[in-house]
Amino acid sequence: MIKLIKAVYGMHDYFFPDTILWKKIENIIQNILNNYGYQEIKLPLLEHSELFRKSIGEHTDVIEKEMYTLLDKNNNSLTLRPEGTLGFIRAVIEHNIFSNNKRFWYNGPMFRYERPQKGRYRQFHQIGLEVLGLESPYIDAEIIIIINNIWKKLNITKNIFLEINTIGSLKDRKKYIEKLVLFWEKNYSYLDLNDKKKIYTNPLRILDNYKYNNIKQLNFIPKLKDFLNKESIDKFNKFCNILNIMNIKFTINYYLVRGLDYYNDIVFEWKTYDISNQNISKTICGGGRYDKLINNMSNGKNHSGFGCAIGIERLLLLVQKNQSLKLNLNFLIDIFLIPMESNSSFKKILVISELIREKFPKLRMIISYCFKSLKKQIIQANKYKSRFILIVGQKEIKNNLIILKDLYIRKQISIPEEKLILNLEKYFNS
Ligand code: ATP
Ligand code: MG
Image (tube, rainbow, N blue to C red; front, top):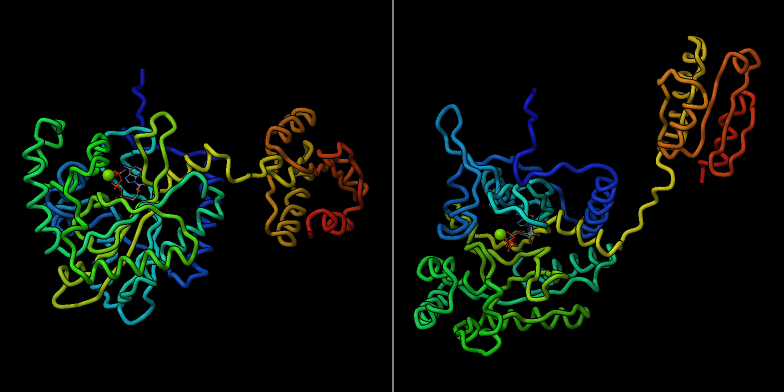
């Protein structure tokens, strides 16, 4: 008995029609990004491990638990990227591309060694936006407007809500963290085991746990906003004002901190509720400002940054659950070509098919090579969800004819070969 090899735990295969929906979502997003002048960049999946260790934050979940790290044959420690921003910043510094366009996007797989569940996988995909060197609440708002337009096009604005916050500067957060640690120490017994471990290593991240929503509502936990500098507060107020002008609904979540250490000032998350438990929300898209990241990773380059990433699998699940995008799956093949059993009809079909492909490059066409009776091949054409069948046999070759069968109105005609293209134009030129 051969032992079957299965996919790696937490990594998924996608098939039709999910792949069609996926592509449609990608196209919608990419058209919108193109419209706002964002340029695509392609980045490696593997990076030096220290790229992530240095910048994400030593005590974040991503670094402590989720990295896919391996040694190559030369004993270099490499990591499958858990997110896109750091590879992007690495590339921007390495190629010194600050003076060109300032708006970029990427699309591709990310890897995190997490406990798999619905919407949480070990390989997942993100489309990310990054803006460099532009520092204004207007550019922060531009990203929100773009993402909001994406939700509009995907028809999911009703199923998704925006939370924003400002986390100020590193200095502000240090002062706040001192108070927060004191608070967690006093309320140690309320914390779960996992969070108890985070008190001194990542006290901010404890705020993410939905279990404490009740305590948060009681206003017991110190709020970061009471520790922020005036400039950060002003920027945040302007940002909120722009969102109001643009009619974008949001709530301020004073406990929103984001999982990675490199953010400052404005952070945001677009979430959707879990239908089974309204206390749990899933983040579809998250991001924020990272003005010190480039400086920390380079020798003295000072460029601000702002970015976010959309989780494609979670978005796909949301679009599927709400059936918010309609796919036309009635016909998946435009023309199914059947050569009857003789060498000359195969040759004829091949020549004709290439001619049609040249005239109508967008048509989906399949030549049946299954060598069965005509009846069985027509059944096959129906299984493929074909719109037309084109048949050539000995009799047709002799009389220079082609049979065109319309599977929609269930009618068939014999047409002279030279009139085939003209006939197809009636259906496919619109
Ligand atoms: P979460 O709090 O759910 O773990 P995160 O804060 O770790 O999310 P980010 O690092 O901000 O997530 O990544 C941006 C988006 O990528 C998330 O909002 C989510 O849609 C998606 N994402 C992150 N981790 C996973 C995963 N393991 N599987 C599927 N999608 C993911
Ligand atoms: Mg996470």
